[in-house]
Image (cartoon, rainbow, N blue to C red; front, top):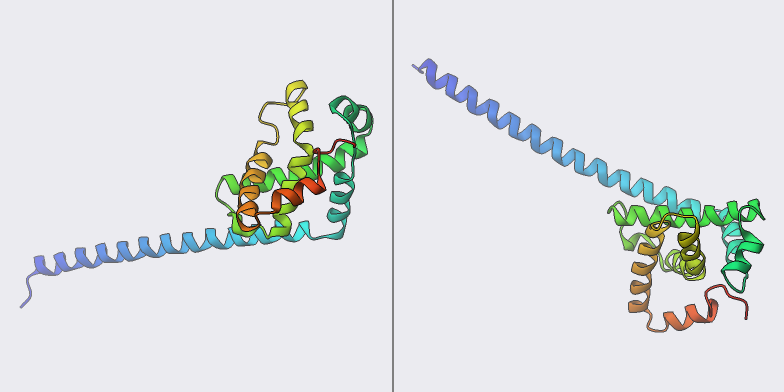
Amino acid sequence: MVDVSTLQSLSYVAAAIGVCVAAFYYAFNLRETMKNRRVTLSMNVLQSLGKEDWQLQHVEVMSMQWSDFDDFKRKYDSSVDPESYARRHSVLLTYDFLGQLYRFGVVDLSTFTDIWAMGAVMCWTKFKPIVEGYRGWEWPKGAFSDLEYLANALQRRLSESDPDFMKKLDAFIPTAGMDQ
């Protein structure tokens, strides 16, 4: 006959195994849930970048021309042209948000196709002097730092896969938004 203490010990072992299996299942399930959320978030954000209205807004913002920071403020500052400011900020904030997702590891660089990567790099290259001007004037020093972080990482990736990338970028934005 089986001793009661042996049955009790087996019960404890079975309970401990059950707890371990439940913990393993929970950790696995949590990891898969986080992975699915990242994929869903990445797809939603990147799909929104493919919409016609955002593309038109991006083209309009990238078409802005100025000779220096003061000229930019005279033409496009929020106090002069609120609609232009709103369009520009929408584009910059979208890329800044993507940069934040990249910085926090929610998305990785492979999420960005070369086309999306080029858009972020071109946007940062064009508006870097403007962002830096506003950082020194009225914005916090870290304004759009996640856009900068993302653009630098994407630029390195694009330059590695396409040695002529910087020449192409310079042809598109020879003086980072300055009039010729």
